Length: 195
Image (cartoon, rainbow, N blue to C red; front, side, top):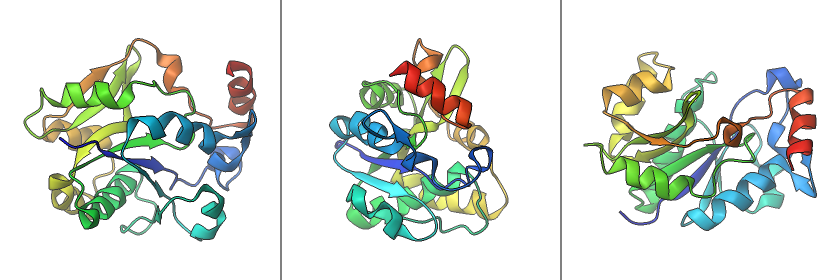
């Protein structure tokens, strides 16, 4: 497998944060999303951002921006599909997804997902912690994109239902806190303290 591309999932509506783009909120010396990029960049061949609406608001990041192809905020799987479609156009075989609001994910996320995927017939793997699976953190083969599109068009929204169907492997990480995500203003204060 070649080094996968990274897809940052920023297509949600951030309702618990009052709307807008959580990733653009300040954190430390930058923003939540700049922290995500900093962690992801050394692990992947390049990065694309999945976000809906006007892509110009992310222009300062200098990343390609792809919107969901499934209408109506169909959840993270729709963002995964957008990333897989983009990767297919570039001749890329796999993407790794991370959430735009999770600035402390492991620095070895991608190598661990690749190792776990060796135990899957389809090359699909999700991150997991003692607290459960982390379904927005995964390694996704482009070869499954048409199956995913059909599932989404049929109304599927739960990531693990689809990954289980395809024998998705688990990359086990020991620390739940590594996948702490910023959903509320209180979470943002906690993230500042975690820095």
